[in-house]
Image (spheres, rainbow, N blue to C red):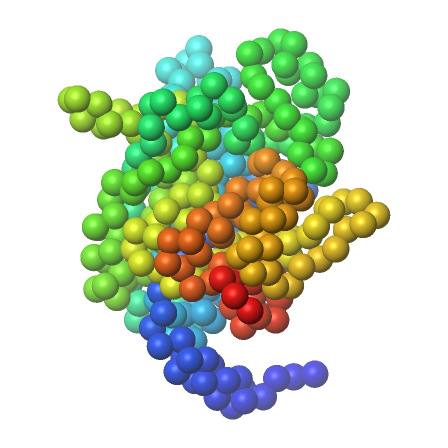
Length: 333
């Protein structure tokens, strides 16, 4: 059934009035840009970003002011492997430098495809990608307990072999897949916060804090990068708080949040209130390196002034904003 373009245009107009210029942080998952069944080619990632851009432009057309961020788990893992394999020919870079590389690469993908999609709708909206540093504490306990998954997926046999031959730490996720895990300290401050705010206020679409941001600690003589990867969702939450966003939209490769995920008692959740989200988190329904950091980010955002948090799939972003898909979390019903 073909959609009536006039009806769609009227619907967009209504949504634009309702949005009233609300500020939204859209967080694209690294696993959504490079999906688990894909090999990671340039063409695959561009195709995924292109689809995402169509959804984000729908949100912009509805009147929201958008700041974007993105994950980099698969990408930074691949960069790290490339660094290691080429180590005899080219000096390998540490994780914080790999994070900066992935920010530039994925930021370029997003920036170009957003401009292309905006142009199709005759929307003159400048898009800018910012290399972003995010401050963490040197004393963060995460440095002694690696839990952030990066790199490609492995089966159990491959993971055990890698752990025997290297110093890598590997862990299993909720789908029985194994990945390397690294320290994931809590973000406490976006170093380029004022630059991000200024560009949003000037009407730019800003892509910032990619891959959770480049992790840095503050020393007496200034900032210094550290070997870690900050969780993208926690960093998106921190960015949302620091730029006074109204909505946090986390886009991943699953449509909604589930209780008892991947068990006979699995139950999909369309809406949650803050109190229940905290209860389910405490009960252990959400696993580390998977849904747990997303739920924690949503909770933190709401507890620090946010209006609503939403978790949904990369390709149904606009539908999630409308409450027609995804899981919406609010303080009260």
